[in-house]
Image 1 (cartoon, rainbow, N blue to C red):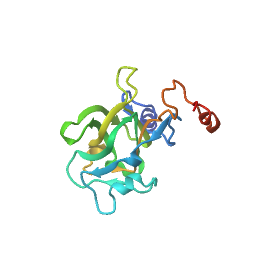
Image 2 (image 1 turned 45 degrees about the vertical axis):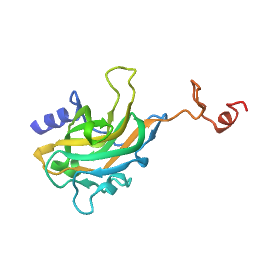
Image 3 (image 1 turned 180 degrees about the vertical axis):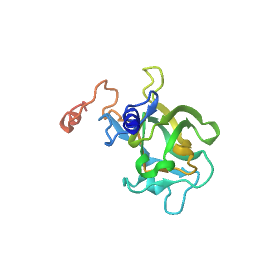
Image 4 (image 1 turned 30 degrees about the horizontal axis):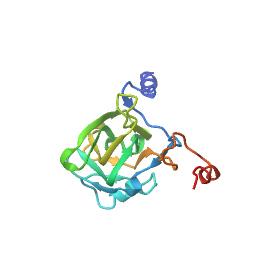
Length: 195
C-alpha cells in the first residue's frame, strides 16, 4: 500500500525538476545546430566517448570516468544562436549513472564561461528539454561560440554518468533576408525577390 502511494507521487512532476518525455519533439522553426560544432568531453570510458552522444542510437551512451563535474564541451567556429538543449537520459536503465543536476554554461571559450541555467532532474526517462531563453520574454536564444554542459551530481550519489544523446537547437534562419515573415514553399521562395 505504501509503495502505491510512492509511485503516485513520483509520477507527478516536482516543481523545478524535469522528468523527460519519450518522444523528441521540437518546433518546426528550430534546426539542429550541433552538427557543425567540435565536441569534447572531460573524460570517458573506452568505447563510450563523444561519438556515442551523436550517433542517434539510444542504446549507446557517453560514460564519464573521473571526478565530478563531468563536462561536455561544444565549440562553434562562429557565433551562433542557440535556443534549446535536449538530452536523452534513462533512469530505469542507468540508475546511479543518471544525472540529477546539470549546469549549462556559455561563452566565447573556456576562459569566460558563465552559467546560464541550472536544472535538476527527477528520475528522468526520455528526452529532457532545457530552454536557453532568459527571464525576459524577448530573450528567446543566446549568442555564443561555446556551450558547456556540466553534470554536477548523479542520482543515488553515483560517481560516473551516462548520457545517451545530446541535441542542440537554434532558430531556423529566414531564407529571404530582410523579410519579416517566412515563406515555406519552394515556389514562394523562388518568386520572393525581384531581380
